[in-house]
Figure 1 (cartoon, rainbow, N blue to C red):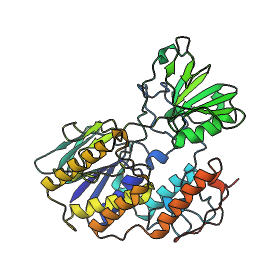
Figure 2 (figure 1 turned 90 degrees about the horizontal axis):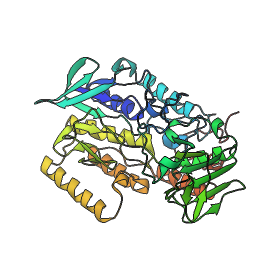
Figure 3 (figure 1 turned 45 degrees about the vertical axis):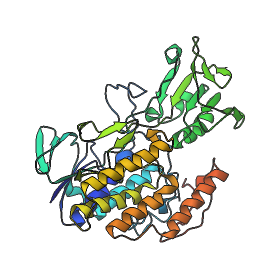
Figure 4 (figure 1 turned 60 degrees about the vertical axis):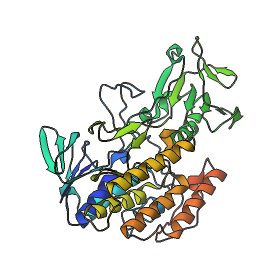
Length: 421
């Protein structure tokens, strides 16, 4: 069996390993000139800082200072540790810098001899369903495969929500996708919109150099001081005719406005007749992985607010094992009914469609369901305990939680919980 894998980030790499382990031929198509996906840093930014229509697309969405917000013992694939006995180093910080994550992934690729299976600078332009298998178009070449695994990630196409009156603002507009370092913010009055990971990190980083920092988002219900120069506000309602930012009952005079509002899921190489994206809900998919009517097309890495690498690993195991008939899926009709039932439940819950792939604490139930179906062990208890410890530490110490000691659980070694100089 010959399997195409689109993307050589962490999801693509672990999928390739599983395909090879199960005796199939793996071909990984990577648009960039190196592996690592979202963990490849590029100091360049786009000419369109909002990322809507750049002259040249820059795939990187990392900022220079980024460190993981979960410890490396959770980041690791479950059978390839993030310490000296695996792809990392015992002396690395518990919450490593992004360069360490890329190094870990490169070591994972080398350890599993994946390089011969990876084609770099090979962007996939289109895949087509054939009577038997799939046709994958890359460059001027066209190749046939029995199955396709999509691992193209979802941190490259900025999501820019509508903000009334934005045309009146004469300052700098950008999305966090095009932020690398705070140099341009020195002495400025900066507003950021978004209260997830990037909004949290960047509001703190920019506040060290800006004159004033206004951090806006749905997590805040009223203005709240967060220090001498940083204030939290609810989400903005728009701009005035004179270009001031309207938040709560105030009008703020700012120099820079940054969207930290996430990214769009996108599959430009797949026909809308095969898969659709409705307000970031990728559908229809059974268990967020396979089409109800075709189990030879898989999507790895759609869930978010998760511990990513182990989740990619169990999804990849599940997809490949059902592909080679190590276990049997429900029939297509049953899968379709389950997909409809779940979407109806999510709709009744009042959840925005763009949050349908958000798991949070539900990730363990989801992980264990996949593991049970494909004959793998459940998520280890130490893993869930460490996840809970991290959440509590982050809530209690939101500024410096990455530098606070945590209990070391599970098979890992952490000699230093402090950043290296």
